[in-house]
View 1 (cartoon, rainbow, N blue to C red):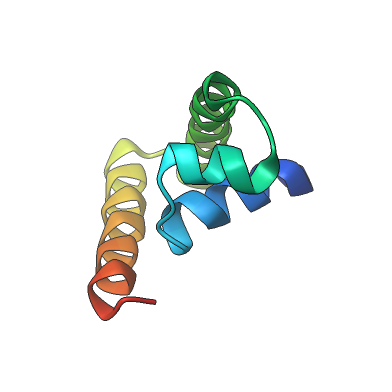
View 2: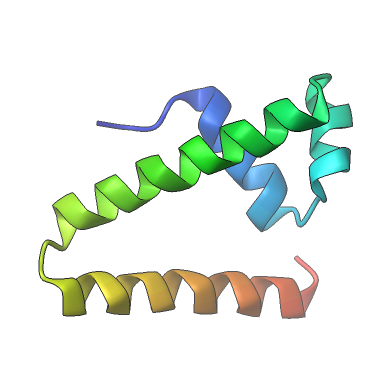
Length: 79
């Protein structure tokens, strides 16, 4: 299933907007430890979705590298 909107917002602020955990905590008005625990759960949920979409480990690793590469390219562009 789709990730909850709150999780998507957290991921967007962290990975696409490049905010630090303290900045995300301030933006969402939640404690810093809440950001850390939600990020851990969000990464677990993403991992589960990737495993369902690409059960072959090689496919999973390629998808993960593509995701990280896209994130790095976005960060390099300052987007």
